[in-house]
Amino acid sequence: MTQAQTKVKKPRGKARLLENKCIACGARCQSVCPVNAIDMNDAGEPVVLAEKCIGCVKCIKICPATALEMFYTAEELKILEQMSAAATSEEEFDEEADALARKLAAYRGVWVFVEQTGGTPARVSWELLGVGAQLAATLGVELCALVIGDGVEHICVEAFAHGAAKVYLLDAPVYGNYRTEAYLEACCHLIAKYRPEVILMGATGMGRDLAGAVATRVGTGLTADCTGLGIDAKRNLMQTRPAFGGNIMATIMCDKFRPQMATVRPNVMPMPERHEGATGVIVREGFTVPEESILTKVIEIIYDAGGKSHVDITGADFIVSGGRGMMGPENFAILQELAEELGGVVGASRSAVDAGWMPGDRQVGQTGKTVRPKIYIACGISGAIQHLVGMQDSDMVIAINRDRQAPIFEVATYGIVGDLFQVIPAITGRIRQLKQQRSGHQD
Ligand SMILES: Cc1cc2nc3c(=O)[nH]c(=O)nc-3n(C[C@H](O)[C@H](O)[C@H](O)COP(=O)(O)OP(=O)(O)OC[C@H]3O[C@@H](n4cnc5c(N)ncnc54)[C@H](O)[C@@H]3O)c2cc1C
Ligand code: SF4
Ligand code: SF4
Image (cartoon, rainbow, N blue to C red):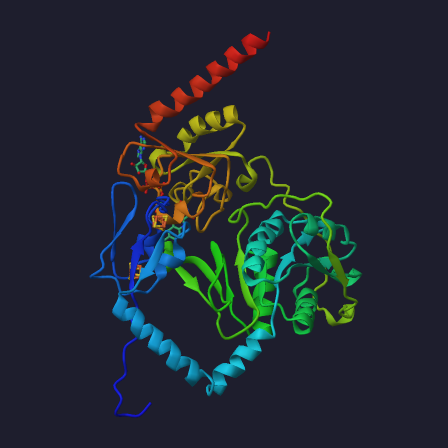
């Protein structure tokens, strides 16, 4: 282009809503808009203010229902066409872009690191195979699992049952107990040899430790605690996670390096269907690390038996959670009663935990646990975004709050506006009554 030529600005278009597609997910589109160009109507659907929209496409990327699209005027479309034609001829001479494209193209495949302790795989690994399958299908590549341990071949069968087409297996005594050095060397060896384009790990103690070490060693990007994963038109992994204290969702991409690495917390992704008897290819790798080169020695593993008060809320089907509206620790007894009737457990908001009313392992949310129960009952919880990200994927949410404007009602399947000190005992009493009636019928 000569200096005399005026540079035409690339049209960015405006976002617009597609008819009948919005599922009123809780205004995710509005929450990511950097210029407040989205209002929500009474039906919970967005109204895009075209005069404010800058065409950043953030709302389109975040929408779980692909309910938004970019709209260009006929004139803008014409400019885009001209630019694309010009770009095609320019690209022919863009050596840098060409070299980058060739570098990225050398990496193919989606890998999931299957975390195991003592031969027992972590559930999050199968959740990752579920989302990994979608990514692999979009990319048109294989979904592979990475199994490292000692005497862990049986895990390959489970990996196939949960969707893996291939398993890279490193089975040797040196990998018996997780140690960063050994697993790091093993992962880096496999990455150098097979070049995957995406690697997913659980955002657990082990996954966080290993992912950070691997990303640093291979010189690539890592996005921790993703809540959404997708693929863009250029095969980049779109990694969505809360940012700025959870007040906005950021979509992060690693467009110049491979592999693209992400961690995801347990219960964030749905569990894929298990296909009994599914088979695949096991690639046995003989690579080991000399024991004497590893500084860390595992003397004993002491499992957290947890004591009486320890409860794993992440695996519960029914959770009754209390917030600041509970007014004090003694009032959690009414939640415990309801939880016991349902066969569930008691959770809490961060405010309740910070106040010392409930232990930290009961906290639900961004800095607590992510849960996906069949029923989540939120009692006296306002519904701050940091709490919602930890429970909004529950099958059913029942919210009890005396403030009808409380944001928790935006994600609730059923909302009860009222005083929880009246509502909860009434629900518990009714459940007991129904149980008694049922047992009476059976006698
Ligand atoms: C970086 C960061 C991370 C965070 N991580 C988390 C997290 O992991 N989890 C989390 O929960 N929060 C987290 N928070 C805090 C979050 O922003 C909120 O402050 C917190 O969730 C509020 O807790 P709450 O809903 O219990 O309290 P409040 O917001 O005070 O709400 C109390 C609610 O109780 C209702 N209420 C009061 N009395 C009654 C009654 N008698 N009957 C019925 N309803 C009643 C009120 O109407 C109100 O809606 C985080 C914040 C930051 C900045
Ligand atoms: S495209 Fe960007 S600026 Fe426009 S409405 Fe969506 S998020 Fe807001
Ligand atoms: S993100 Fe999508 S589904 Fe959610 S409110 Fe916006 S348009 Fe509707």
